[in-house]
Amino acid sequence: MEKLKNKLSVIQQKVQRFRQQQFTFITALERTRERAQQRTKPISSIAQVQCCLDEYCQNATDRRVLSLFLEIVHDLNGLLQQTENQFTAASNQQIESLEECKRLLNPNNDLSRLRARYPHDEVNRLSCDEARNYYGGVVSLIPIILDHLQQGLLAAERLQRTAKPVVEGGNEVSSENPDAVAPASTPRSRSGRVLKKTTGTQSLLHCNLHKPNGHSELWHGGKPAWRPPGRTNKF
Image 1 (cartoon, rainbow, N blue to C red):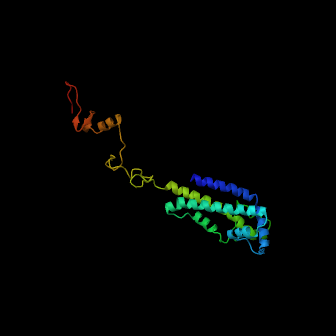
Image 2: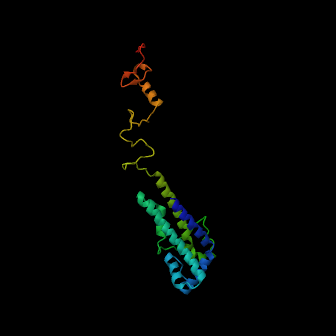
Image 3: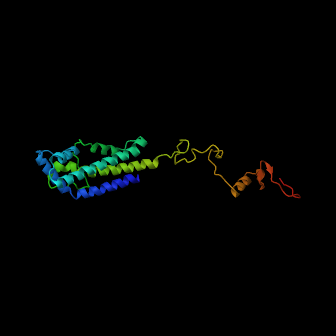
């Protein structure tokens, strides 16, 4: 879990750097859309951003910022797969936030109506409604994926905490009933509870409490303890 959190922290640092270049990112998309003669259509998928980079990008600055966006998307996809492999497969439970991440990270998924809400301000930083319509979905992708991944990691951590520990022999012990599984040689009371092992003085006191007729002598195998000559046992 700590490795996944550390990797998420590294990705968040990249995202912070990318947010500082959002206007450069939008300018790069504008230029590539103009060369592709697609100015009337929004950038609505990860695959379209990749196409802009591969076929229509002629500026080093544009190439750098588009590559940073796709690199972050790739890192998020890798973190998603690691989280699924470690927790979802082991617990046989689907984590809703991770399933949503998988859908959003599909390269051909339509992002045109995706919008990041408060406290994210990526969409509000776009210059006008036209820009929001053209690029609102693609700039909303990364912050929304980050939110879902954080929720997925928290859910996976809860699954890890509630998982039942496995004892030798393959039996599971619930934290609510630690006496559910115990070795066959462990002493039990009449009620079935496991008795704690006693040593030294504790074992002597235990024998003393179980002597019949209320006497204080220690009993061993039903016979009175040895006494010096001249003393008689009174019952």
